[in-house]
Length: 255
Ligand SMILES: [Cu+2]
Image (cartoon, rainbow, N blue to C red; front, side, top):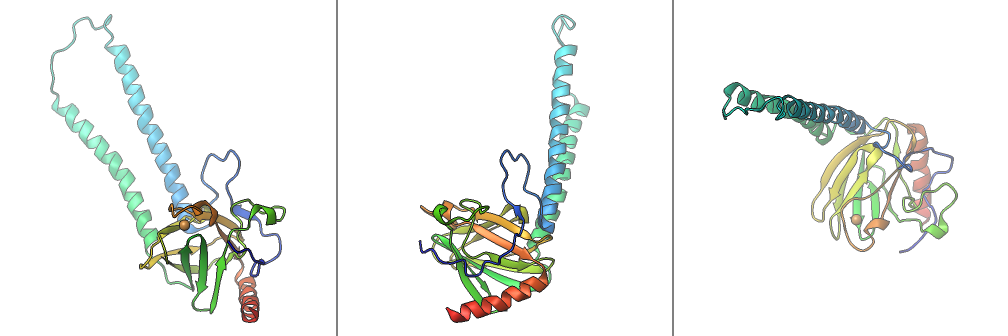
């Protein structure tokens, strides 16, 4: 794997936001509207699940106690109760609807790309990513930075030589493809995970809320170095992004 200079990395201490933490139990902090919605749905479903578990467990314990042999020496022999059957059909249907309605709303929200300010094209390769900003004439590859070349503070197996730089608060249309096998462009804190498939163009979108560094990985087993093609997104205010674009044009022209 060729290792090169961090040609397009912008200096300064951008806080790493989208990074897994030791002993982390929940999701990474949300940094896009999609991820905020995913986080909210996750919390809602967790509460719903706890409610179902508590109700079933409570009912079970009540029945064990109420119908124990000592208290209930002659068991009932009936085998049918219409009201009970209606109840245990309708209640689960209501619970499933309470899950399905917000789930489908969120799917629709993720899938419908709003009017975009910028397009980013992502291509998966064995085993690196390449990025293109078709409107801006910028194109570069992003390789893993090996352990021996990491600078202090750079996370292992997540740092790339060139970050994907994106403006904060702007809607970015992301187009994905691949030229060998199926990869998947996944960044947990941005709520992104879309397959990049050879011969096919997939589409998703992101609007990053806060400046910072966001990390992800290829999420589709794609060969021996699948675990070594990370994704690093650096989000910055639109003015800083404009400067980056100008710098990138200069640096790419020199290459
Ligand atoms: Cu891959």
